[in-house]
Amino acid sequence: MKIKGIIYDFNGTMFFDGDFQNQAWSKFFLEKYNRKVNKEEFDLYIHGVNSIDTFKYFLGKSLTFDEAKELEEEKEIIYRDLCLKNKEFKLADGLEEFLNFAKRKGLKQNIATASAFKNTKFFFDNLNLYRWFDLSKTAYNNGKIKSKPDPEIFIIAASNLGLNLSECIVFEDSRNGIIAAKSGGAKLIVGVASRLNKD
Image (cartoon, rainbow, N blue to C red):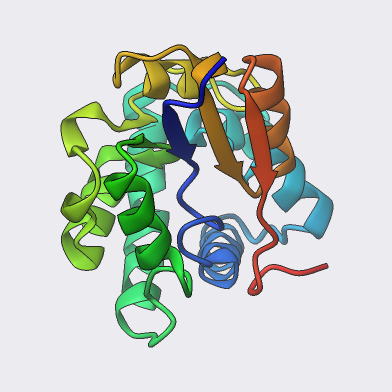
């Protein structure tokens, strides 16, 4: 089947923010709950995972969507502040050229991110993603989409472009995201190694 589209995870793939995310989550859990987070927990329960599932693991109980969003926003205030104060808050080197190349080739492009809408719009506004993407078609954490490794978010991102996931390439950096793309039937999955989140 011919490749017609590209779906990008955002955090850690288009923008290397592993350190920012880890610092923000660590600061949040330590200050609010006196809880340290280890690397395995970051990999399994934070990166690529919706906040409601993250809090279920760390707090040991289920939260409503509104409760999870309120806690997540406390963490995101820390995260956005870190982004705006750091010169590394920019698209990955070479990405703009690639996005322009894909656009010239007529490939449809979309983003599938575990971030909530407020952060997604923050990225669009501050990194001018409107040059390549339609915010209204982006698949983000709206409290209804299942967390990766479930493939739902990639399937929705492709569907919003009028495509099947099997017609798309997926760029992803997290273990959960790669599993999700594979199980969803993506044509090709490109694993991205973040330079700010190396083992």
